Amino acid sequence: MGCLIFGMATTAYILIETAAGKAGDVSNALIALDEVVTVDAVIGPYDIIAVTNTEGQNTVGDLVISKVHVIPGIVRTVTCLAVTSN
Image 1 (cartoon, one colour):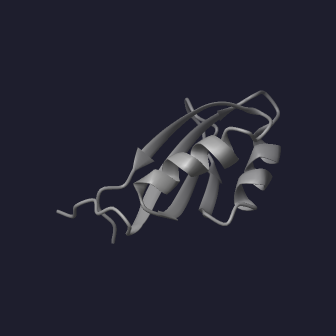
Image 2 (cartoon, helix red, strand yellow):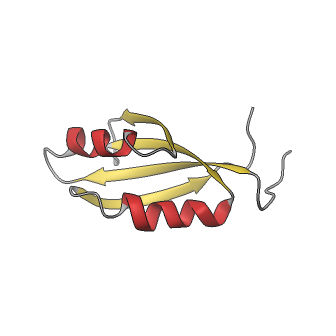
Image 3 (cartoon, rainbow, N blue to C red):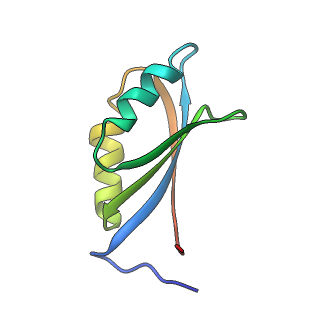
């Protein structure tokens, strides 16, 4: 099993709940961010799952706070760090 190492590439999954009718606008804003690898609309308790790739765990937090949370239409996020990657 892999381990988390500071300073190395970190993959995170950001589960996003959007305001009604805002999923498309939020998706477009997310995919424009350099750190975002993919954006998928999903059905369930969340509306979007964004996959990110950053340089370390601290930059994931910075990304979510400074670039994701400020996108109009986002109601709530949950960020999940990957502990292994293939």
